[in-house]
Image (cartoon, rainbow, N blue to C red; front, side):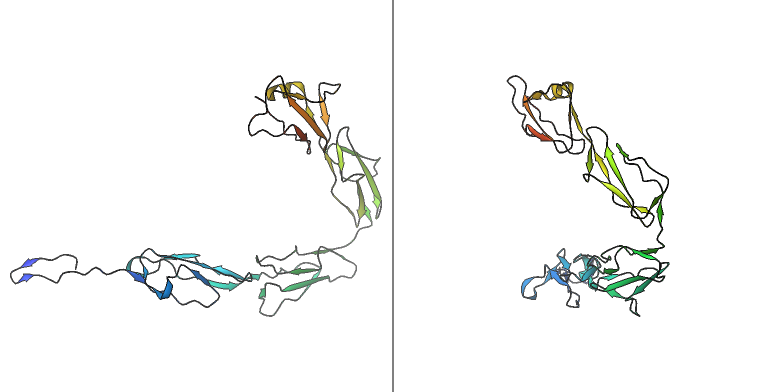
Length: 273
């Protein structure tokens, strides 16, 4: 009782005593590292926090990473545990045989699965072996098996680029060269696509140039250090351009430097004040 009443025979009860609220640590399985325990098994008082972690990368923490000693000497959450990291079994894939799935279907970190096509005429696309990683994911995407084709349709278009004269049908192994529009740079250089099993291989990009004109430079109070013949300059991807302040102005604090490079259509301009 936290109150007393004056009776005929005296006070109704004894004086209450205030005791320090303390919590007793729960048992752990040895895999868990607990941070915040007092030295020499001291008393864990109300409000004290403990933190937990799993030092082994093959384990993952299951539960709350921290608990607090709460009212009544009870922890606000149960102590967490360190459980084995596992990867989910790949669902059955059409035309693909999966080798290495155990009977209990539990695959821990480092477990490997191998794949092969059930039809000898099919081609495996992707890695023939994957490994269970510490994040609980497979090291590579699960492969597929497909029936190879002898022909490809017209090669795909590339933004700001063009192809040789195209046909409606190409045989396996045939290639098509690409070129970019003026001032655009082909990436990778001298790129081409090749017909492989009915699919056009490798990505191709035409990298954009940067445009710098007098109006844009006026807003930044800059000019070309080495003025070109034209008032507008197209800098191709990778090119460098050097600027300087107009008049007696100086480079603004925090501004980029005077020597800048065009990166796929973007060039940062210095600012003077």
